[in-house]
Image (cartoon, rainbow, N blue to C red):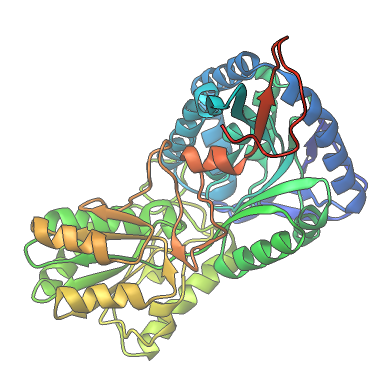
Length: 495
């Protein structure tokens, strides 16, 4: 049985803890590895290593940092098929989806290659007589990234390319469910020439999370995960005086108007609802169908679901398993909840016949109709391959339902009415909006993040906001006196 160790200071580090956790291949339903879980000594070792490395890395020129990031980008592009296989083996998503995840993460690496421009300060000459004022941007120090299981490569890459480009050192705490991608990335950074200790991987559970949140040498925390944990991360980190960006959960709605192209909507609903087995914070989980479009739309979605092949992601399949048996059972339980509350089960994913080992954590695409908005199947984040249809009478009713929810991560509107689209994007209380685009994940030079209980903290991921989060500004006021200066003046300069 392979053991996944920490990577600290550029080398594998077994740690001092005797605690481990299982790592499964979800398509086989069997344990394939063990991952070590950090204790207090391991946390201190990681942080102390990062502190020492950060001071030296900050002193490196911007040109040198940029060269390392460029090299990392080239190596990632050459070898990303290796990383995709690791992701598929531990998460379960199909290889094409894993490659897509890496490509979206690579966009942030490419954005970070432009760090010298984004790290420029401002300068005002002669702000007062012979007085210049200018600002510089410097790193915050050691930053910790706590990432979820659903995107073991992309989500960390939302943060660490920018943090490293800005001169920080990084401690990545990946999900213990699929930890090996983080180690692969650490080895790639070493090959790219990043000094040892600038990028570290600390494996663990809540002990590791709390250790990073409370460690005085950790300056900033980046987190993506469920809303209850995001709120806990935010409150704990803030109480300890740390910068924190904590991205939480979602319940993303797609509002469909009667004038929309129903075939496009059906394709988009299936792609956005069932890609990566619905384990996406940007997945569409609710279709708000403005009557009379619902019946036709449901039939077209049903037709498409009949052709989806669920199975081992290494084969020619459309959708893989869920990440663990416990998660699979939790997601499946919402089908019973919805049915008990009066919903109609149009397609039941529990009846799937997968192209894979019978022990795998399988749940096929599930389509529910007439889901009551009082049902937990509607109000709670399910994070699995269940698509709920809620029938509404008007555009306004659908908009009000979206705005009344506790989440505000992503949403989409499908219509051919430009006026409706403009009104929707103006009035909807959601951070990321798609107009005839089902998964509105921003490109790397914009920033990612939602509203309401989908984001805690005032900083979103990547883009210019990412550089602001990972830097702190100094403002320098300077005066270089010429030889003719003389005399005293105890007041502020007046001109």
